[in-house]
Length: 322
Image (tube, rainbow, N blue to C red; front, side, top):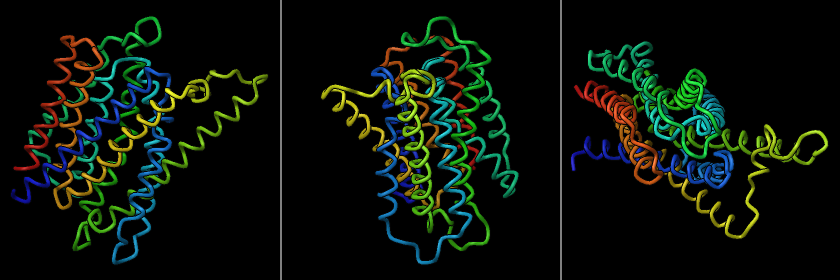
């Protein structure tokens, strides 16, 4: 297989792997588990995995470490927002916004590194905006709180998820395209970046869980299951529940670690192609799974949203190849 096609395959499979995380989120939500709980142990495996990778020949630049820390913190914020978004609307539009996180990376490369922004890329960005609007028109899932979601609130949460989740792509795009190095920094120091990112995310997640448990230990002041204590209230109590939790942790670990490892394996593939291929695969996988397995209604807005999202990533990807 030609090298370019092999790297493109790795990028596409990374999107499929990332979609597995959405499946773990939704399965966990049906059992009263938050995304924080599902990923709390999974991120530890990622930290250890990338820490055990061979050390780079040269010391890792400080700004790579800083980017890793900020990426971990913004991923934590995205996970918190995902929990709220799942209670406001269905999985499809949420995963659509997560999968369109290539857009800031494309604009960043255009503004900072002066990569040309073709007409097809501009059309793709406009389609992404249309996708966000259509996302706010989706029906609520059966398990969500009663009453229709407020369109403005739902759209605001989706945009916040989009912004927080996009930073790690911005960071990796910068490491792929950073000037002044013979070999892209993501090839030489990508493992260290991912180790720090996972480590920062693990610190945030476990601190959050610890604070929730402390609050729950003070019933006179804060009721268990109240705001900020969802983790404790939802903790599994039966042997079967613990088996389910471990299965979901493994599923999330495979999706997260596998997705980032495959992104790392895409190597010298330009950032615009890497993240658009990954986004397209993740978008289509997550959207199809939500309808085929979670029985979300495939409304006309869902079809239009999927079409706009797939067309958006496809156009930007084609423009990146031209």
